[in-house]
Length: 202
Image 1 (cartoon, rainbow, N blue to C red):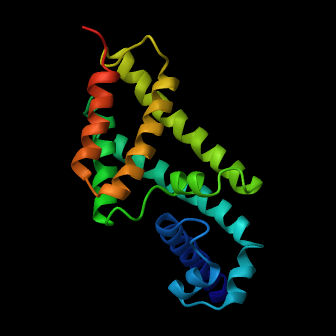
Image 2: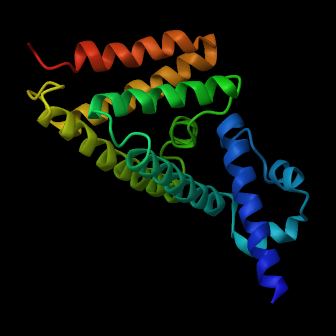
């Protein structure tokens, strides 16, 4: 009975280390040995769970997406429940900027990091990235739609389009912040998007 439990712990440790390392160093900058060394497990343990690095990264994308959605849903049900949709979106980007700053602007969004690093190079990873992005857009499109219904955001473009621009701006902001280290400027960019470019006309 103990062996399956230890095996699951090893798998979880590999996934956690993989997310951390690849978020910081990218797909090409992270080797399997680097991840194995981080969790102190032998090479054979890795291939007991994953057929290849590509399969491993596809699983990381899935796990990371689930973690982010759980965090988002928890926030919306708890501390964000009494806020307006725009204030929820503001809280979300502020949290993300602060987390990035806390990691010395090195550990970024795994999805964005991989999209920039491998793109369509890996079919398996590309499929996982597309699925994660689609789920992300669905979740945020709902928030933008609520903000439109509340009269807070413009309605001449769809909630889905606003969500797409929000995603692109966010990922671009992280890239710039990685170079400059300027969290205040990153927050200002996101705020301008919400309160100027997305704002409903008066």
